[in-house]
Image (tube, rainbow, N blue to C red; front, side):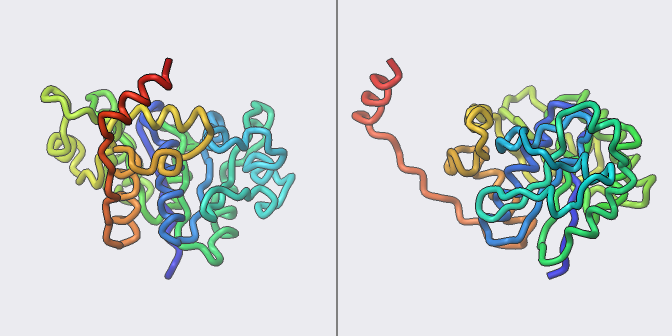
Length: 259
């Protein structure tokens, strides 16, 4: 299989782009796919934080500044997932040269099935490069008009660098009648919604424990959606896990444990 480079992009911050990158990457690794995720959001790096890698001495910052080799910035994640975080310091960000990202990607392709790039939100020089080096671009959007308006700008920017957006991931949906649905997203953005990720408190809890939600609560609504997305990308059939219903006694026990 030829490696596929996916850039996960969004028009604005806070859409869940980094969480999507982490859980999609983990889900692909759980399918046995050799996957690496890269935090290319050089100024607002969060991917490493979600895995407890925020104290890493060598990151993408050092690689892009010419101070380290990319092999030294690769860390182990769950299920064989590989992670290249960015640093948290402004000094490291200032020293980084985003133009070297293409070289970094080329150095990581051997033996990999998927490379996922967590791109900076918005329109900037730093956000253009991840779009230009990708084989495929996925847009993470929320069911809000402001999110869709900004996503449309990223779609246009992607086309300007000679690439196309494969589809949208509609994140944090609540299935309210007043909410923007997948049909409306397709109408406004001119692309299909390839997966809908429901609003799920388990995502926030998993982040607090620095663990992907697909591992911490594998049968939660968001986890199932992320795994379905991974199966679609990998071209495999998704088998939904059987969710055991909680008995009355179990509910009582759980209620007492909370007190």
